Length: 404
Ligand code: EZ4
Ligand code: CO
Image (cartoon, rainbow, N blue to C red; front, side):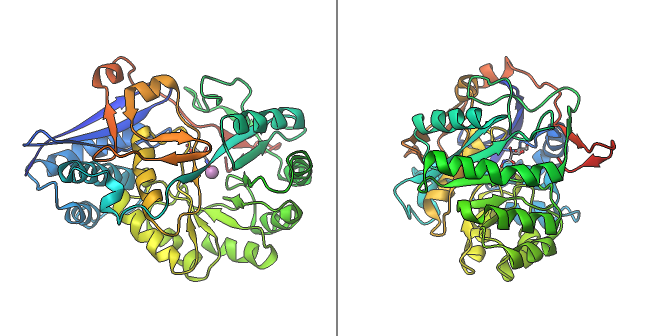
């Protein structure tokens, strides 16, 4: 078998998605997600200009060789653009291999280790009443684990808190110019424990609750938040400190028993080396889409599992259904699965990317269709072309930029 075509499709059915479609001389196609929110076209160029020409004529079955060729062969390694591009190739080749085998991808990853995949959803609100309503709405959709993001008194707009809900219950956080949000760590640290106290009182001790600090705290601030949240028994505190600094988590770890999760902006195993070796975290949060694909994610989970650390693949709206499907095949197969983030997509997105995976009673399943189980509707994709978009930026009260 030979690769005869590698096409990059950019579509914006509400938000931008970048998809690689590889075709073989037998007419088999494979899809890979390469969406890098707010920097999409950099990956498009990397794939179109630098990767696609290298794929033509290759044997699609040699997935590991293609991965090593693109990773080591470029000389310039790592980084989100490179690793999103490599991820799309890796997943598209796994899709092809599984289709040729006539098996859903999870069967090639060792088969199912579980029957279904527990998901968590995103609740949010600018008041406690709004948060409670949002939790109830998720429970009605079946969710059995819920992330809570709250507005903070005195702040105009805070990460994860949406004012204008759209079809899937979220609001676009992507604008043509970066929105400027405000931030005050002291106000946040004072307020968030009160939110979790209220949510626990309202919903009882059994509901798993999560929270994302989105890389905004210093180590000592994160340590304080972790301690203050201990009475409310969080499933995890996510991304508490800026992700570049693995040593920061050591200080947090020394002070709190609140479980820690990190990794959505990581792109290789080297970002985790200290964190895993020294057991500084409980969950690895990378996305198949940003970490070089299914192949390195499987290796990451096997490595993390040796330290009792579990998987928790990143699954926001800006991971396309292609990236989500790839994640679900891994989730079903790996033994040390923890939880899967899942917000769902708009109806239009689900039409552009028709998928076999399902969500029911709070649990996901990748389905039994050979490959990853996603079909791209190219005509509908073309009807919704790329729209420039940025994530917001954060500024403190004195006007200086803070982590968003
Ligand atoms: O802000 O994917 O846990 N989920 C997250 C996401 C990220 C977006 C950035 O593109 O933190 O909502
Ligand atoms: Co996050």
